[in-house]
Every structure is written in structure tokens, then in C-alpha cells.
Length: 333
Image (cartoon, rainbow, N blue to C red; front, side, top):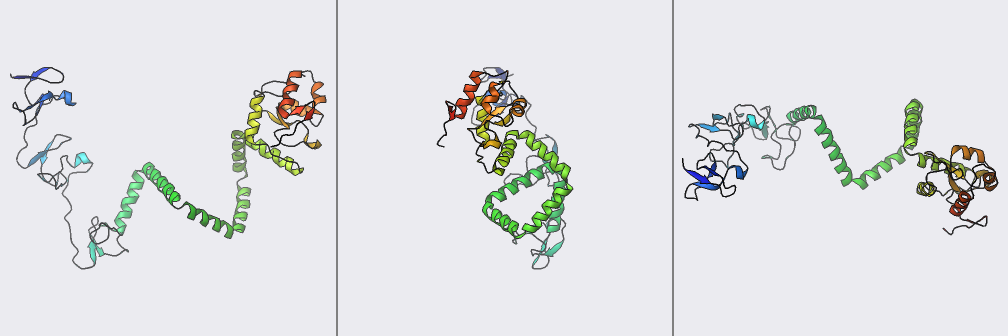
């Protein structure tokens, strides 16, 4: 048997169509590189199909070269697709014969084959359509849509969400203005609906509130403290970011006893009852024990009387709050 050396892998292989691709430009009629170097397996060359038959490119079956087994394609020599209908997810069967409307101003539906008036009542408008309408009537399209929705629920939901998002981005200003106008017009209805909903869903709302407060403890504490402070006509300017920096400054520990705690209270150095503001210069982290023990007492007198008193911690607290010689240096900002 005649052999041939592959130009890439340098292997000596039989010079046949089982190991090399055909090439009319070369003298031997075979390519210089083997099939494996091209990423294919060594396979025997396909036999020619019988007259009136055709090999499917995917399943390799020899089938009649008719529209019953293959879809039509104009740019092919034989006018048929390379793979059969079953490999493309369809069953073998003859194509539906194309029918033309017998009367002017009418169209034949490509699905149910009914002759219907060519109007928007029966067909959707299509720019590419021959008569300016889709080839399938509205009723058949709705049935196909419902079948697709039933068989592909996840794809349909993803598509709907994507379309809704795109529509909102395109018409953001218009939708916002429309919603605002509707709320202004229906203030009384919204108020009554809110009261009724809160009354009927107390347990659900309480559970939601608890879950939210557990996830956003610092934010909720800040809101409640601001509410209490403003109720007494005192300034309330502490933010969540400032509180988090304050906790980091004291190493996630109580500013008084120095013990680390996961849940630290926002303790007013000067008590709220004595005019203490809810601001960065008056809030320190404290454990529940120290917070309840201090109550509305003088901070320095109370702290110095405790068994866990430390001059170092006292100096750290005063420095953080901006005190110098027991007098607070008010910041400009």
C-alpha cells in the first residue's frame, strides 16, 4: 500500500481518503497534513448516495432527497439542506401546499389554511410581509404563543423581565411623571388602601420589619435615636457612616469597660435629658450594662467610680469627642 508522511506530525500513514482529505491542487490528490492534525478522526471516505437519495450530514443516514425528509434551500446544488428534518427537531412529512386567496383583499393563514380578510382584525401588521401582514392569523399566533409559554416557563419569564427593563429604561422620565400624577390624583384612595392593608397584614409586616432591622441594625438604631432627639428639639446629625467609624475607632468594644461586643449601643456621653446632642461629638459605643448603669449621670463622675475605670480609656474617649482640659472643643464643621 502506498504511504504518505504527514507534514505536521511526521507520521507515516496510508495514502488514502481514510487518513487524508482530498485536494485537487496537489499531484497525489491528497492534502499534506492528516485528518487528526486538522482535528478530525480517521474515518473511511463516504460512499456516494444512490440516485434520488442523500446522506444526512449529522446522523449519516441515507434518505430520499425530497422535501419530505429535508428542508429546501435555494443556494444548494440539490436545493435541499445538508441535515435532515429529524436532526433539526422536526418530524418527517411533506410541506403544506401553499394556497392563494381566491378573492381580492383576502389572505390564507399559513397555519390553519383559512381564507380571512387581509385586515388588522385578523392579521398582525408586518413590514416584510407580502401584503403588509404576517402570514399567520392572530388566532394561530396566540395559540402558538400560549404553547411556547407553557413549554418554556423559565425562558418566557426571563424574556418578559428583560423586555420590561428595556421599556422602563427607554421611557423612564415619562413613566415617572405618569406615576407621580396618578399618586397626586389618588391620594385619598392610597391612604385608605394603606390603612386597610396594614390592618389585615399585621403579622406579615411585623415579620418584614424584624427581618429588615436585623439586616440593617445600625441604620434602624440611627433612625430611632434621631426621632427621640428631634422630639426634644435637639440637633441630630449623626450618620450611619460616622457611627461605623466610631465603632472601628474603639475596636468594636465598649468605650467604658473595654469588653468586645457584637451589639453595641449608641451611648450619649452627655445625657439626652441634659441637652446632649445626637452628634459625632457626643456619641460613643457602649455595652448594654454600661449604658443602663450610666443612665443620665455625669459621665466622668460615673466612670471614675466604676471598678473597670482606666485613665487610658478616659483619655481616649475625651480625645475622640474633642475635649481638652475637660472642655469640649467644638468643631467648625
